[in-house]
Image 1 (cartoon, rainbow, N blue to C red):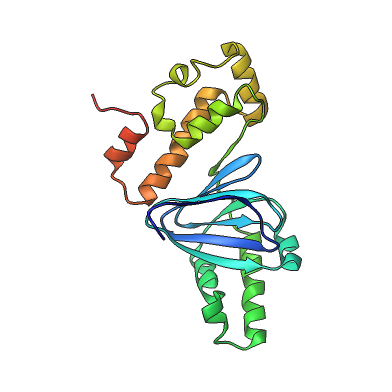
Image 2: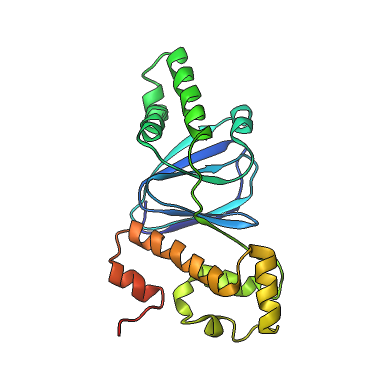
Length: 212
């Protein structure tokens, strides 16, 4: 893929399992932004409105899942930890590989893939998006580039609400105070940049941390 690429809000009539061999990908829904990085897989159910932003140097694998099988995996977007067996099953169920086998063989592999996913460990690489109009624009600005803000005070300097109100709204809508929420977003961005091959020192600078 190109160094970076984005797809605006859309949905599919099928589900998608996506895994990153290298590079990274953001998936945004109405309520969350999720990060896919290597050694993980993300589940996007059918009919879910979402946007996608690819990081640099991506090699991604996709497995399309029909609506009937999608119901078995659930209708919530999730991130699972990849295992060696799960990785092998992803590769084995790619279309170019499936065409080499008889139907019953593929059915058995798909069933095994399903059971591996059902027991896979969830990975908390996501952040909740607030909906209150007083804080959402500031959340969106931080998601775009958290390194633009050297502190929480710098980030929220123009907000039309008291600090106490902002704290209450963030906790109510994201489960985190704004300082922790911004730190979480910085971590997601840092993982994305490291997955793209950036140096640790460069990532730290991009996130607003300067060496003394």
